[in-house]
Length: 477
Image (cartoon, rainbow, N blue to C red; front, top):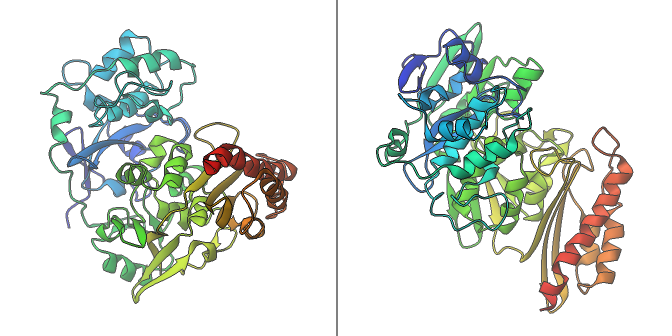
């Protein structure tokens, strides 16, 4: 086991003497790479964005943009990253040049982060092969503007930034970062890094991970660190023992069986989105509404469920999909329905010595699905209420209904009374209206700074009405 180090812009750089909790952002700035900035320290603004070489979906390597403010430097031991400084090699990088000539940089504080997010999308392999845009969020060059959804410009210079994004062409044949995609990214390394009485461990296998967890049930499990990073930065949490499970091969599979689909708990949401390519429509609707692309590039289903948050966006969707979780410990595995997983506010049936290995979604899928996220902003926001629907309707009669709710109780819940009110009844406006009234009574919504209890109940009813309005004709035809 060698001294932990990160390859930064092509140069191996030791992590020491940084403590195990020190973020990549602070590590970079201490190493002289001051382009990355701290704007929010919780993954909201993107001023800290960097690119990481990760296993590709359609090629050996994808350049992936992540928030450097959330990930501990120790989590990138052995990995390869590129900062805004690393994009310049004697001349401006194409995305830097377009940002400059189109006035995309004003005060300049956010610019390096925008540059890295834009460069990751610039190197997306199928970008230039995408069809002409059909909406205002895709450029004629195939640039997906959602790639910048996690980057904030406080000078409100979004129009020239968008113009720069839509002006970049395809990478040149001799572009070194484009050529780098044809080679595999660095393999995960085993890490045992201790400083100041605290330890960061990256096991090589699942069996090693669960043995460590058996011996240290107080350990903090991390994958994308999009939740723990906030705890470190905002609440000054310092874990004595951290176990990284994001690169474990056993947690990164995606398998399609005859009766179920299995998603590795450590796959990032972006990896799941691109590998499924719409195969699970309800997940396809969820992903664009889940935080930002920067967050989805690191966040995992296992992490979102592991926190036990009542407003995690994945839980209502998985409840509607009737999904189950595979929990692993040193003695084996067990399967738990998501509907039985949560036991209280940020509590679950998962024991301290267990981790989530995979999510299983039964097949076939219900044909009528929807995910309604009610929040103050259209994208990159926390839900006030989240509702997921999955219905089977045959000959105009509802044969099966699954409804998952978030933000209306201490845990994500199934709307079982509403499900019962739907099953066996005709799919009609009268049925939907009766179900809407029942849905308004589900859960125990509270009033807080995001929404009042009355508003949350009203949104539950409106969600049912919206589902019917959007699917009445489709079912009738």
